[in-house]
Amino acid sequence: MSSKLLEVTDLRTYFPIKKGLLRRTVGYVKAVDGISFGIEKGQTLGLVGESGCGKTTVARSIVRLVPATGGKVVFEQTDVLSADREDLRRLRGRISLIFQDPYSSLNPRMTIGNIIGEPLKVQRTKRHRGDYFEQVAALFLKVGLSPEHMNRYPHEFSGGQRQRIGVARALALEPKLVICDEPVSALDVSIQSQILNLLKDLQDDLGLTFLFIAHDLAVVEFFCDVVAVMYMGRIVEQAAAEELYRNPLHPYTRALISAIPKIEPGRNTPKTALGGEVPSALNPPPLLSSPAPASPDASRGSGPRRRRGCALGPRCPLATGDCLKQTPTLKEKRNCEGHFVACWQLI
View: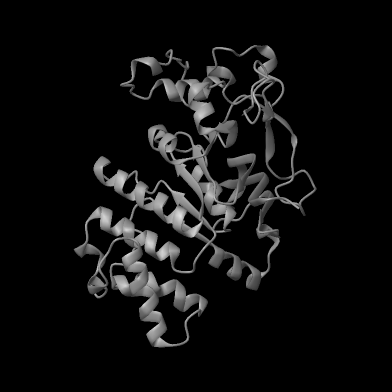
């Protein structure tokens, strides 16, 4: 039996492109194109990459806020993608989300007390009014807010306080896995450190497991145990955080890390430049392979076609002609235990 709390295998999420009066499907945006990873209990996995690479779609697919095209998501030995309505409701009580924009994720017409306590009402975990208010007050204290502010509205709080409210709401049902979708990117740098330290303290106190989505590599280095780097819907490199930042292998990872401002002379990383423009998700490079069904039940060849070749190939300084012929898979680098890379030139 696996020790992993969450296991994602070959997850694919495609969005159809429809045109014309009859709204015919003419193509697909392959937001997530076959990624696999696992998270151990109590661990923090960082999922990083530039905007539009599919990070948020991964998070929403895991909890079925958007329908996955294929693959498997196993949480606590239960397949989330095939769970029925009642099982999915139970699973969503064990998995919670913290969103990027703390203001737009809060209903401006509800008091903070009702916002934080809403999951308790939806899941009907508290039958007595006294128990409900007692737990909401405890959540306020847990994230550094005063229960005296329970009847205030979101606009009466600062950005950092709103994100603390989002964290409290995420903890209401005592989840095992918390998915953080760029939770500090909308905050000032000084406030970012406060929220990150709060999340670390909560992880230690409650034994939480995090999937931490971000594009700020400095934040990920500080917060995460393991880092997976995404490009155009696929994971191109994965390793322990210390190993990844010390020894980046994939050209895309090298380019990202070399762009981080360094103040330590000993950590200067040679600059890695990628040629060309970032490709469009509507028309990703470079070639197409045989048709792949859009769902497990679709087998007539009318679904989206899987990409062949490395998506970074046209921009990569290491690419050869062979890189455009076959899609590289994520494999462990020789003599680098636990360090996985998807590159024909490095495996």
